[in-house]
Image (cartoon, rainbow, N blue to C red; front, side, top):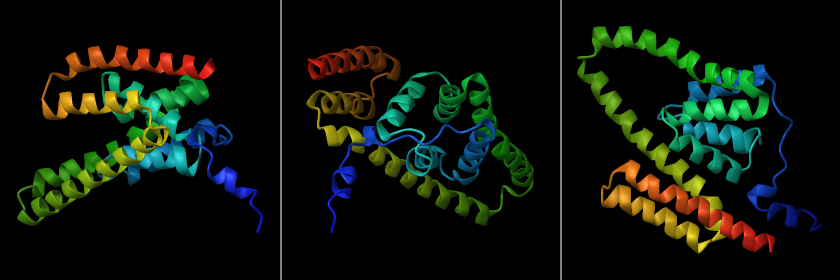
Length: 201
């Protein structure tokens, strides 16, 4: 059996070759599919489509882009659609991805809102919504672990310490998000610059 495929299988995520850049129609359709499949949150399906299915980004690039979008005001996935589309196809690409993400669910939610206004007091419907919320939490936890994989593979102590520090500050100690970010962002940028300088040296 040939061993040529072994090194390729062990390559880090950052070395995965990118697929050809999509056109505006492809961006629109890709984000429309994400939004229509995104029960419990589009992030799970966005990462799968962008990284695993189409290979438009590596796992590390997706994490970096999503981190930027997370610190911007507004919904994270909406920010991601604009940043990602603009990165590949300029402003027109951002608009195409943004429209694909929001147009289909907006139409569906308008119809569902009318139905809910009429039948929202039905007990069966409330139970269904409670079950869906549990599945949504599970999906979110799953994608968080997948996004952590590239960081854990590198096993950078500084990265892990910063990640645990932010989690502890916000999730456990309940410190204000804005105050934590004002400290964490400069520290993260500084640590990344130092690590890259060491690698370059």
